[in-house]
Image 1 (cartoon, rainbow, N blue to C red):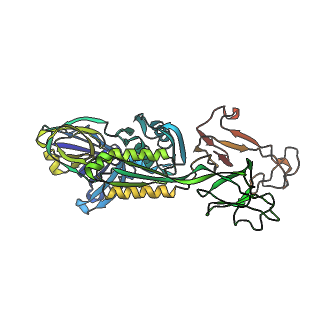
Image 2: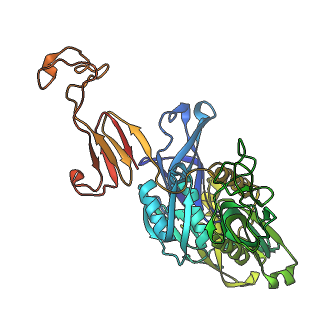
Image 3: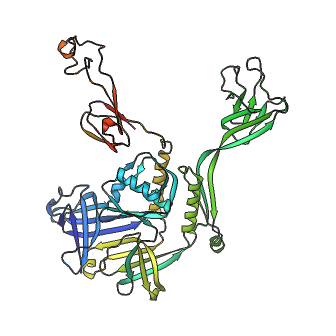
Length: 530
């Protein structure tokens, strides 16, 4: 017999049915629960609050279970039924919900190993969770940016680049581990397996992969020899940031058809962007600027080129036929990042996938994403290691009595409609954030009249003491003609002054000589900080 324990905010409650599900996505694992609590005559209508912590335990042949299978938060509570038959349907998610609710402000990291980036992000945006099990990777990213996406999606992005996955455990610690490298320590065999089934599928085989990123500017040069007659020089590409030299002398340029009048004297050439032409001008106003016969013309400019990478697994193509996959992501700003995505996709999708489902007797605490060893000779699965795709705990009157609560699925995940919709939402967020600031210093202006904690890297406060300045609406300095307010005894009038302005900044002697990671605002004035 299996005994579950459903605990909310430290108090246990009886449940009719209870289901806990742990599933893995492309680069993450998360758990949810659904329970039905007996609610005779609406007894518990005002008891369960959204956001309260839920802990679920379960064990076999005991009245006091101690094996923790879920820790999370309530998301919804729905009343069902009437009178003595009334129940509350309570649903929730593990602490990955906390990561989903937190937004990462525009951040840039360069030349940094992935786990260091994650640890820094967690300290800034998710301090409630610990990072004891964030493993060091071998991946150093030369540049990665985040544009107001959730903390969950930020870690997922990093996990995909390092071939890792992540989840929040029942002790609120973030795990960041390599794919298929985290053993659960559990072996499933004839002693604990009730039933099983395994199948192989060719769905989602990709052996020809294209990755399209953003367009970037790259330098290019065209050289010509003047003939003394021709004034138009056609470039290989549409030019950006043009620098034009004639016999090594830098020329002054303008934009073709953007001059209100005839080109003024001093301008030597015009740029016709759409036609890829450099036009040397001559005339009464502009002067004669056509390069002479034999003159060397060197035109340096930037061209806009797309990031495109392509890869193929020939062995897979020979065996299974050509299978194409196209990935379009304008957030890819570096060709090396696109290459890495091609290699990862080919590595993961070039071979068929084996999936299996196993029903287990008793209770085991196990997490989707971990690996499990399976030894079932009758199904030709002999001491094979698989990644766990999902774990389901189903508690009801029947399963509690016969002990058949736990079922798992193993091996590679086949994408379904939910995965497609999830990817569409992520792409929409990326599109919405595409033109937001991703580098440089972001200035913010906040005002407050009480103590307020701001999360900042650096701060600067401008301060000036009030002397005989008039303050509109002020209870004291809003009284004109009051001599006792002024230090020298003169009357307070419009246009009077305040003391010299001083600046207090982080890292200065005035602030204690420290670069404070946070600044406490206690001034009734605007604080501008970076």
